[in-house]
Image 1 (tube, rainbow, N blue to C red):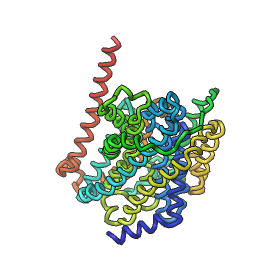
Image 2 (image 1 turned 90 degrees about the horizontal axis):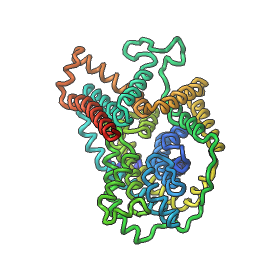
Image 3 (image 1 turned 30 degrees about the vertical axis):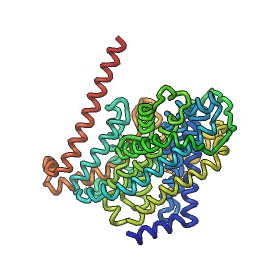
Length: 501
């Protein structure tokens, strides 16, 4: 174990390892700063670059983007009341008033920076502590348990990713359908290939991820910004370091919100937006001066930022231990791992202990690098807000196309991102969530393979799956979760109807 740790530490601390993390964090902050871009979009664009790096350097870059993008959204939330990502929406409530009503943008950004770093480091420590415990339990899994776990992961995401559970399930089913394209590895039959050689190997993950997340978001941004003008942003800061009094005042909130963010991040189907709002509400509930929230309260900035950054380590817990991504970002990480030949799950701790320690060390180091870059380059990052969208968006769309083509040097992949970009755009307009689609698309192989193995072991008796206690719990939980979500939505609609009447 010690040998694996030292080997991982040596890899991360090499010049290329440090440059990979540095480049990833810089890219992540840039993506987070620009309104309309997201961490998933940044990871989609940089995925081909990460895959071109040798060894685990690509994983280090992706983790850097993951950590940096979550923080970057707070800059726009504070400066122009526009969250760069959904994770920073709650930061607008107190960040913008402190920056403009009280003319303290530097103070607001310094609190945000401190809270973001604290939340990220806290979750990284929790990841190091809890993942081995959870993975030792998961080693008891057979084909039946793995199938039930994949089914539970898809059901949770489909249920919580949309206001309409039916649309969430619809998105998951579309992902499962497209994941079956190609040659059936069990029977050798061709499925939905339409007599074209490009589909015999199935649909590649990279064009799907880039198209659904990055290209579609670019189309949406073009539509929303068409014919609009952007107000001038004041980029002058009075300070970049937090004061001692602010640190003392927000410390209890940092602990509470970081724990909340880690726990929520470990639940598949949740995300930083949920964690930030829960952290904000709890900070207000525990505050001695709740009336100050919404009017520039320091705790109102620290709570959502520490909670949403704690998602980074929390979301990696089920990903590394069970192989289940909790949202679109961890789905991107899962895709990067699998393309590198690594399969997250309980066996990863046995077969690739050096990679596990590499991820742990990279998460901690990425947050430290993020702190240095945030404090040292805050004035520069704020100036990025002045870049107009008519310059930024064409560059993003071109990078998406080039990145997809460069992966396999196939024009079909470039065409695929356009197809999936349009599909993602239409799903957005019809409010069909993309997260269930992409997660079911990635988990389909795990679901189908273990279903067939389990049926072979039970001689095609599916009811025998319920004789396995862990599998039975997961399958029953999946059904109950969907049913509970439907009942909850029906009740909410009845209340809204009664209130309107």
